[in-house]
Structure formats: C-alpha cells, structure tokens
Length: 257
Ligand code: MF3
Ligand code: CO
Ligand code: CO
Image (cartoon, rainbow, N blue to C red; front, top):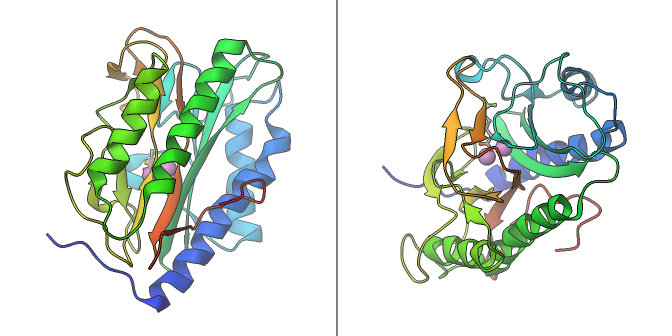
C-alpha cells in the first residue's frame, strides 16, 4: 500500500481541519476545572464542533465509539470514554483528544490539562511528554526517517526514567482518520520510511511513569489503562512535511513553531 502524498489543494483543506481541531482545545481549556464531568466536556466540544465550526466530531460512532472526544484521566493512556459519572478532581491530569472532519478532511490533536494544582511528578510527566512531541516535530523534514522520530521520543522519555507505550502509534491522516504510515514512538535513527514533502501524519507519544504495559478494558472495549495503574500522558499534533521542514497543522496560539 502506498502513502498518499497531498496536493496543495489537499493541504489547504487539511490546514482548515487542523485549525478547527486546535481551536476546540483552545475553547475547552477554561472548562477543565475541578467538579466538571468528562461527559460535560464532551457535550461542550460536540456542540461547538457541530454548531459553531459546522464540522463533524470524528470519534462519534467511529468503530462504535460512543462519544465525540476522548477523555483520558490519570492512568488512562488513551481512548477514555466521556461520562457524566466521571467528575474531575483537584490533582487529576487529563488528555483531551479532538478529531474533526471539515470538508472531508481530518485534523487530529490532543493535549494534557492539569485539574487545579497537581503533584510535581504529574506535572513533570506532562512536560516531558510534550517535550518528546516537540523534539520529534523539530526533526521532521524531507530526508529524515520515521526511525529518527521514534528514536528521539524514546531517548527523551527513557532518559527521564519513563517508558513509551508500544501498542498505539501515530498515523497518516487526510481524507481518512488513520492511513499509512504508522508512526512509532520508539525506534532507531536512520531506519524506516524516509519522509518526503506532502506527507501528512500525526505524532502522538503516550508516555508512562511506570512500565510500558497497557490493558484494554474488557467492559467497554475502548479504555486503555496502564497495567500498573501509574500515570500516563499524551500530546498529539497533525503535521505536513514541507520543502524545508514541517508545518504543524494543529498549532495552537500558545505555541510558537
Ligand atoms: N484521536 C485518536 C487518535 O489520535 C483516535 C481516537 S479513535 C476513537 O488517533 F474512536 F477512540 F475516538
Ligand atoms: Co491520532
Ligand atoms: Co487523536
């Protein structure tokens, strides 16, 4: 199977989808406070995506996923299902993962939020995980390889005594949610697929405080947790490879790339 190289017209549409996904994260930030439920965060995002952005929340009904965003709290690694029964409390850390479809194109991004003051070790895990993503983004240019990306993420995580989740990865993205290539968050420099201008993909490292082992819920079929129930963090951007580097299609105003 071949990797779909985007045209300039594709990229115009991908920029809009990416911008909308980023704007959902900017919009929802002030609501992430102690006492709110993840179900309420889902409703606010759903209504904003549908009514304000005139876009589609991609997770809703995707392979049976029941909600419009993913909400992954503390030891939940990814794909947490929003619920009115899950109330955020002081000290929690939460990943909100937003994917929107606009004019047939996908934009996919996530970030961590601290719920009130959090312990220093939780704050550090969130920060190092964001640095993993940023160090990987800095390497993206034609001629670099997917192994370069995986290597820098693994190196930064493990040198901080954290582990990289192996069972989930970044992905090509465009007119489909998940397409080739798979973007592993571990690996060896100089190996794997060589990047070329016009590729679009996500990088979305999941980094654990304890071991890398995870468990898929056998009740809801979605929620992924750490086996040891220690904390996990994740940050995600959608990128396009350009002539000299990359464009972060889901960049937020707080970020300077
Ligand atoms: N947004 C996730 C990703 O980064 C995928 C979520 S699939 C869902 O690829 F069904 F759980 F929403
Ligand atoms: Co993704
Ligand atoms: Co995502």
